Length: 148
Image (cartoon, rainbow, N blue to C red; front, side, top):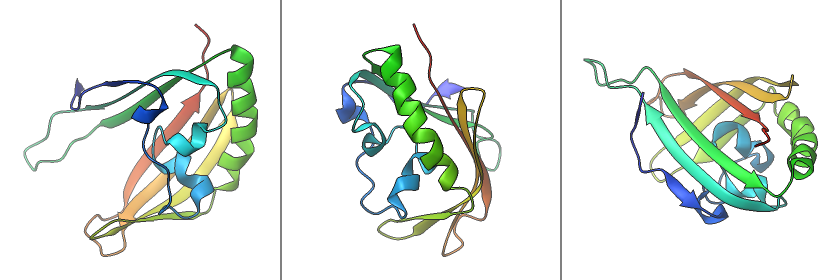
């Protein structure tokens, strides 16, 4: 895979804006990496975001697209506290359909499975658009904490 957008580094301002149009808002973290709202109560220092993608195939499709957000918090205890708070919210989204209206289309993400195990929050989703422009496409999300 290759970097397909500039890697942004800074504070929480480099994270994606608040999910005022995502419903239910508490499930926004499952459909987008690095939403500011998700880290609002975390003492965040440096933040980095980026997108890595595989080259397009003959039809113009990519086989791999990875969106990453790294949030540096003050202490390992802060990271652990965030994880303990996020895990039940993440799991409560299982079975939900998360919608995000845009100007011309509405994205619809079905949360097939959401779990917390072995220090990872994971989710399996199927994304589509309500108008059929994007046919159901499987996605996966993962969050973990690490100490440096």
